[in-house]
Image 1: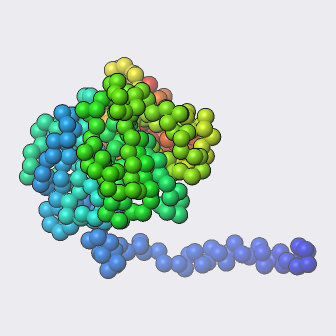
Image 2 (image 1 turned 90 degrees about the vertical axis):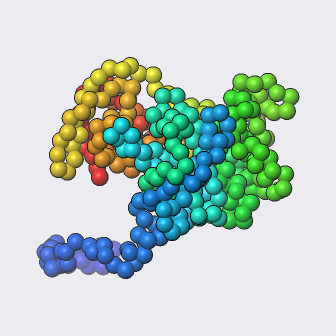
Image 3 (image 1 turned 135 degrees about the horizontal axis):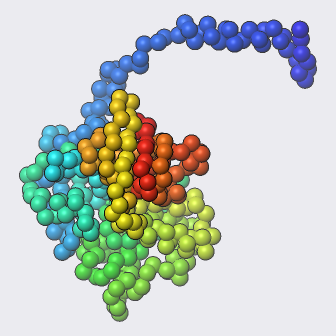
Amino acid sequence: MKLKIGNEKMDMLKFKNLGNEREKIINSSYTDPVKYDYKLNELVNIIHPKKIKVVVSKIIVENLETKTFVLKPVKGVMPNFKAGQYIVLDVFKNNHVYKRSYSISSSPKDLDSYQITVKKVRNGIVSNYLLNEVKENMEFTIHGPFGEFTYNKIRDCHDVLALVGGSGITPIMSLARAINDQIEDFNLTIIYGENEEKELIFKKELDELASKNEKISVNYVLSDEKSSVYETGLISKEMISKYEVGKYSYFVCGPIHFYHHLNEIFKELDVPNKYIRHDIYKENEIELHHIEHTLKVITNDEEITIPCYEDEALSQAMEEANIDAPRRCLVGVCGYCRSKLISGKIKTDETCIREADKNYNYIHPCVSYPLSDVTIKLAK
Ligand code: FES
């Protein structure tokens, strides 16, 4: 039987047989698992190992609450990275491995070491440990570098306006150093918001870079200190509107409430999303109560039930219980921890989850807090 489609006649019998043909080809195909021991993969593992053993070669006190840690590889050199990327640091403490992501603040030119800059976080187990207990010559394991908060000349404008809140300056510092080292080529204007002048990190070096490199400029905004030299208050619509929409890419880096604040301004200024990049970090933003629930975690091999509190992210609870669940950025952005919510109620940051994932109940446990007993299935 032939069916006419346009000027073509289609043989329906042949069409019907296509399924069988396809089945035959699938059945005769190669079924062994893909090999991973190719020479090329060995090379990839050498250039970008999954884990790097590092030693703290120097600690620089930036201010009362902030230190920079210079991490040198135990052997070889560090992998290449793009300014703006981060690493994940494993911290072994109280019989737990805590994983925390830190932006690299050094220039990609110097692969003898990476620098990470850590500011004190209220109730931050890891930041307090790093700031108070870590000494030079201690060894750690890091993973990465990871992240997309990098300059891409095809995607981004030649002029970048970096809007920084607090320790969000760290990846921007790496970008500024990369421009000065001629690794990146774009104009960088930084608006750096802090509470008080004494909390500004890298101020001396930023001022030096701005005075000697015409591609870099920096403005400070202090929220809690009146100053005749700097702007006071929060980074505002008026400050941002001095920079023509369409001519600038906006690189936003700071705590999540800072990001929400700027998003409102971007909406008012009609800034299209394609011009905005962001790298956010979490503070104790969600006000919940220390009420205990249970979290059942289903992996490929087992089911584990652990306690989890309403003011504790599911990833955090798994970390406390030594469950090796995937985690990386810890702010809901990278999607690495994506897991399926099987049952229970959670509070989460909806903006982090794609619409398609919402329809199939996928969540990011690093930004999900239990409101009842919860069961999740790890995707990796
Ligand atoms: S660890 Fe990145 S989204 Fe959860």
